[in-house]
Length: 309
Image (cartoon, rainbow, N blue to C red; front, side):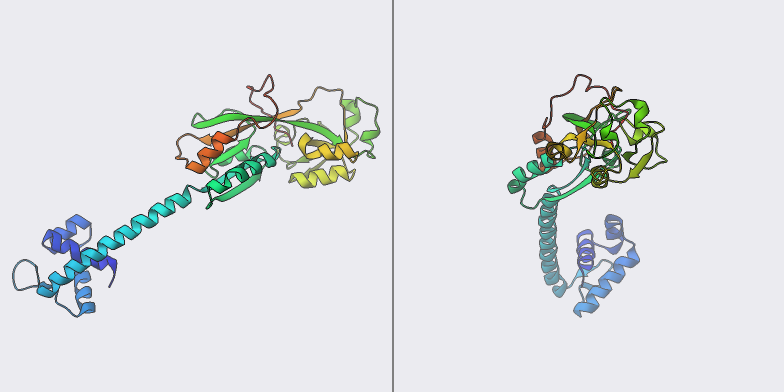
């Protein structure tokens, strides 16, 4: 005996015939007739009297109908209750895409501060490069993103400024480029390897904020490898200042001073889609995460076409 058989049985009783029930519950008359026969066979009862033109409940059928309605009512309440709990749980699920240059400790501290309010929180946080965090919002792969902006912004996207992250060129103190007189000229840079996150096939503007044309380049796929290679003396590269403060302080890395004018910041925005229904958790994070970094720089309204790597 199944709930579907009980629903079909209740529909036949309610609408008076198999044909009438068929038009109301969008099932074929033969399938309804088959379900009723299977139910009667399972119960070893005649639920309907078939002596007349219309199907009339037998005494056993009448008693079973009362209990069937009770069972269907209980099943509906169970489903409704479970769905509410499921929605509540869903409202505590969130996917965040964070640009690799943003200080993740800011997000982690925020999550820690609100964790007690969301004991069933399910968090998925991804680290992205080259604007992929923004693309995840557009493709509905993430609920929230913290990312630099580039190009035209979709009108369906809501965003707010969070912070400007300082980006600095660094090298190991014993590397050849660190031994050059400061400021380092653009010509001298060409003789030293630059370490960049990306792929050689990518457009230069997608790879580095100050990728030197013609320079020798090592390509890596993520931040920790880039940092390790720079510290080993294999080349120089740009890194977020917050990631290398300690190394600069203890002398394991040094800042490089170039004679060319470089951008030295990456502005980050909190981004979400406006046409999505955001749950309490996502709204809480949206409200709470605000201007965690340095003050907004003068040209912060200009969209960045070049993202630091």
